[in-house]
Amino acid sequence: MDGFFDIFSLLIAFYGLYFLFGWFRTVVQKQPVDTKNILPAEMTLKNCNDEKQFTSFILPWMLITGLSLVLYAALSYFFGNEGWFIIVVFVYFAAILTYYILTMRTARRRFWPEIEEEYIRKRQQKRKRK
Image (cartoon, rainbow, N blue to C red; front, side):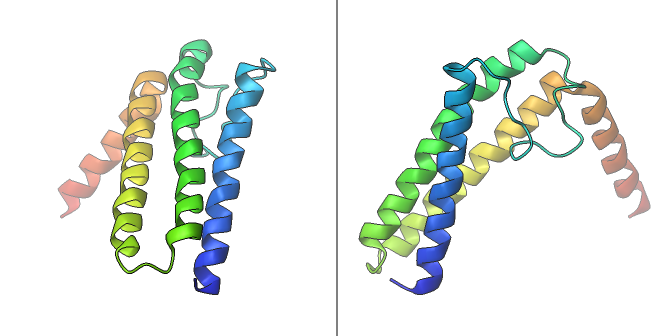
């Protein structure tokens, strides 16, 4: 395995463990969700419409994403030299990224409607300029 991919896999594993730790803190220790590394800066728990609903919405995502990233790092460690693995890694990572984008879009629509309206307005203004 190449040194760059080793470092990249290690960073992905740590990020996955960070998600799992955040999930553990929220579920077991009953602490609020740390949104600093999950959500964009303008989406905070302070301006969320329903913090409890958001927590129940985001916890499964944190668990699935954390486990997926740790699994990705483990697979890249064991199968990193295989030629077929590059395609598998690309598809797997694209699936995780798509899952993140769809989840954040749904969260923005459900729990931050003001931010969603502003986002739509800016997008429409860009289209009018073209």
